[in-house]
Length: 201
Image 1 (cartoon, rainbow, N blue to C red):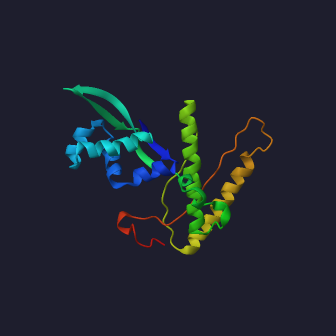
Image 2: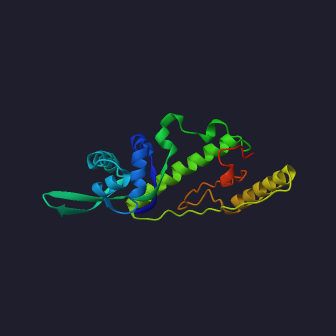
Image 3: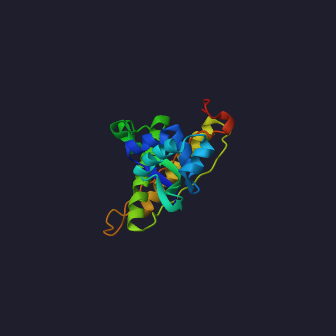
């Protein structure tokens, strides 16, 4: 079972966005049968089986075991991941594209860069899983409180200069066996749970 799986197929994305199937995915973090899920969700076993078939078709759940109960066989299923992320690639041509308006001070551009990050890392995770290899990544996540907009601008400039210096130091275009890496640095106002849904600017 993966910690996080990335969904890049539009049909699979649509399945996970359906409320009942999303609830079933959540419940199937632990193995369960259609009958036990039906009792928990207040649905018929036939209805639950219908939803489960859709999830299984897209590889979102898998068979753990089959149990014989009387004259029938009960299938015990489990989610293939603890959480799922829908890749922007599932949106096809309407997915965000950072190259359309490369304005590093634009929140829309930051969102497009973040979308590309999800898409790229998702594809790498998929390829790594098939090859039986881990993906080499690194991330920093933290918060900083600025006294003023001027302080924030000064920080952004110093950060840009520092990153540019590190890139110049370590980038080797002539390295025949080297591998390119994408660097993403973002800065945005932090949001507390109480602020979600409100303007955080």
